[in-house]
Figure 1 (tube, rainbow, N blue to C red):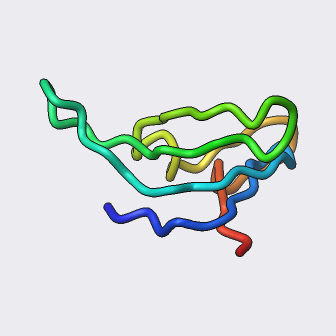
Figure 2 (figure 1 turned 90 degrees about the vertical axis):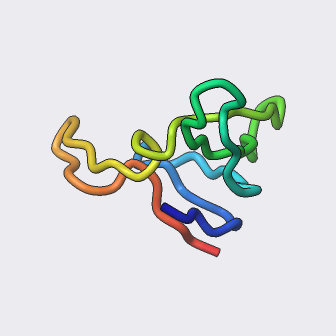
Length: 69
């Protein structure tokens, strides 16, 4: 699954800049590479399946991340 670079909002409200995807060298699992747009602006990776999944939590039901820009 392709993840477009851009600004995404987590369902809890924080924003992140997605740079793209990368494959694990051993397993070839696909990960999303992104950074926080708050706090320390640190870089993170998350499995594509987790990034694109829907969540149901605290009265919210919808995508974990949604592209806003």
